[in-house]
Length: 261
Ligand SMILES: [Zn+2]
Image (cartoon, rainbow, N blue to C red; front, side):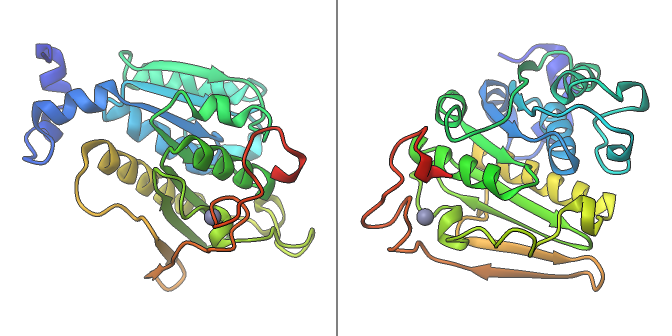
């Protein structure tokens, strides 16, 4: 049973027929892991907390830098130098003190990933580098947990969901990481801050849809957005039978394997 203050806090979504009190209780009972508390993770975490997703796991091994604040809106000027999960936890507590926050002040790796993802219902990947994206996807696929993936750079970004069941996965879309130096980082190429927020907010919406079983989640569909033209496209994709993680003869089948990198 929802308390009176919960009925009031969440009233604007509880009145939606697709949510209702039952849906709100599902949100409050849900456990979502957010990998990376940068531009994507900042927006995703705040919206999931505000919606009453009851437990949020926050993993990031970085500390807040002044150059982060242009887009990483969960952190404030006074947080510069603090570990990002701690800074984010304080902001989340200010937005919604009833959220349980589990902070992981470490890097998400092929070694620790499966045990971390395994204790959550959904993973939201807001990481900013290929090794972490592969590690998150491999762990979510092995744990049979849905993964809400996004990336953003300069003026463009995309969002998709790799479903529970582990197939297809990130490696189906991107079998190999690009050669080092061929794809610039945010630090090198720059990024429009609000673009990261747009994509992080969509990740939060997709996670809420998964929790509530509402609508059509972005499974096997890559939602792409070019902010320069404001053109949105949705590209459909299929599992890759030759995928080394989720294909017919997988070679990446356990954590802490060197091949998982
Ligand atoms: Zn795959």
